[in-house]
Length: 314
Image 1 (cartoon, rainbow, N blue to C red):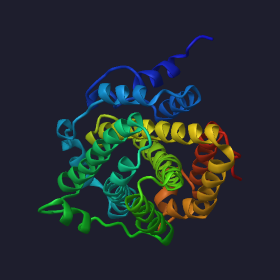
Image 2 (image 1 turned 135 degrees about the horizontal axis):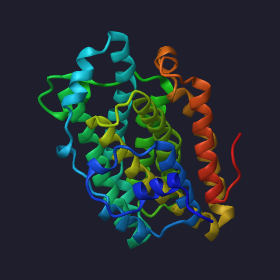
Image 3 (image 1 turned 90 degrees about the horizontal axis):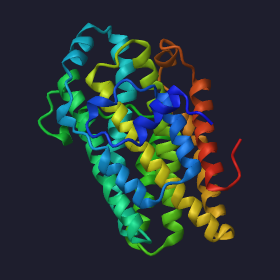
């Protein structure tokens, strides 16, 4: 079957050795997600994912936010609040996943998994620095350090977001920290971290954020270029999580499939709530709706569950 131009563009984004963030700024996000889904079906090895990390390095300090700052100054107050709602959640979420990932590394059941998770810690740290720099230089928080920056930009989160990032994720990490040999805890933690938070929530938010920026012809902005690189990193993490869970289900379906299903079912009501804005106009002014966003999130979740080899959710 011939590869279409759009499929090739997606392949260029996700696989070709192209270090540097400035080369990824004009790829359509749906093309990227298309290739991610194709990659899920073919399942690269853990070392393949490590090598992909090696070839996809980028630097937060290379980004130029001057056009972003010019745009920000011109925005109406309501538009600023709608932008801040989403980006505050990303900034806070990236810091949360960075601070809780170490116990997953300690619990890695194989050296190959350990090697990949070590790269993910670096990725999540870089993502946190990316949002910190955007808030300082574009919004102008006046923060003296990252602790102050996080405090000043703390999102007005709803109960669902808080339940996932401030309760369930730290609890999963603490359970692994107490007993790194608890394989059940590792599988449940990977389901929460990589499938619920990164695939269903993270990639969904990234898709609509990048679609909006493309619609407004802002692909040459520093934020769009950096955020595209963040999405590319997250695609590796999701592929890793799917592989871990698929391997576990193939090894012992009676043991591990129910653990994955239980975690997803418990989190399912929280997903749509976490993605719901405090003001519906934050989405509608960009041509999106709660239903559209939630439908995509559940579809993304089901595609990953299908690849893992367990029953999908409604």
